[in-house]
Amino acid sequence: MSMSSIRQLSSFITYQGNSDLRATVYRNTTIMYQQRKSSGYRPGYVQVPQWNHQPSMNFPARNNVIYNSNNNGNALVNSRGSNKRSYGRSNTEQYDDYEPNRKKRKPEQETIPAAVKDNINDKVTEGIWQYFEAYRQSDDIYRAKVDLRDALYVIFKDVFPYSGLYIVGSSMSGFATRSSDMDLCLMLSQQPIDGKREAVEILMAIQKCLRRCRFVRRSQVIRARVPILKFEDYDNGVECDLNINNSVGIRNTHLLRYYAAMDWRVRPLVLFTKRWARFHDINDASKKTISSYSLCLMVLHYLQYGCNPPVLESIQKLYPDLFDYGDDIRNLKMNVKIQFKSKNSQSLGDLFLGMLKYYTTEFSFDEDVISVRQGTKLPLHLVQSWTSPADKNMWKCLKIEEPFDRSNTARSCYDERTFARVMHVFSRSYRQLARTHNLDSILSQPF
Image (cartoon, rainbow, N blue to C red):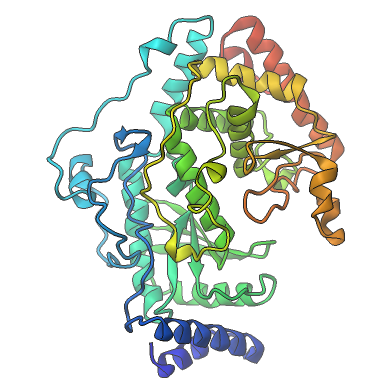
């Protein structure tokens, strides 16, 4: 990247004559250029891990990790960038794209292991699995999202040569449904960017650029705690949320993808829990209820701590170097083989009912904080001891520790009356399901 390219970036971000923003982007990009030059980086060679072109989480798993035979080193996240859009590929063709040494064959039909079928909650188990099979993100949808990301990066890379455009959130972690949108993070710099001012203006400049793209429509900049640019892919209707420099979101996606691969029951439980929460209108942070990310952490916490023996352990404790918060996100490894096998043989129905019981009768929301990082619950006074005085008010009704920056991911759920309704849904769902062992009893009408 030449200094003239840096000046090009600076001029591109000159939106409404904001010289402060221009100076900030110029400074941060110059720092990135100098760091890469001193490290022996070649111009135009973005040395980042194979992130966006991982296999779909629906690919056959081997030894508790998603199998990828083409794992001979970290490929470039931007190496496949292309403006070619091809959404009509078959699953077999997708196998060959990702794993060229693998023979063509039809996708395998997944079934519930027979050992966990026959118990009192077998109908619940079957219902959860059928929902998962019917509504999980398909390989075709995943491939379409990857193609869209590639097309967008072709636009971005000429102006942001050393940037990284990451697919984040449920689309990459494995917890997406067919209707889930695609979250994207554009990493411009390792230096922080002011979210309220600089990030908004960068997104507005990108919005102006995307108006010339035939496959982008309905773009809108949302000013929030993490500002986003919302838009829709004209070709296949995928809705997208683009943010700037939200590195914690990249780390969260990395972490959740490994949890999704640790045990076959994790993904069905998370997807069905989100479906149940949406049906009862308690899965919307804008309504002061629980965000999808926080719901996911609640399920993981129960699988770590609430059931016996545990289905999961804290992967951050098992592999601390793999999830080092101080590590550069470009060095995140996606294909490490996790050595873990759960001794828990409970069915999906048993676990879902157990989770409802745990949060209804066992977990103390007044005194405890959910910590997936530690694989346990933490006392509130301990968490407050390392929280800055200005942020102590965020630990209110629902307290879930963010696995990396240790903030409260459920800070949106702060209203006591709204939280009382959330707990009513948990409690009544547990009583109904424990009595009937039938999912229709908790999905026929909202509580």
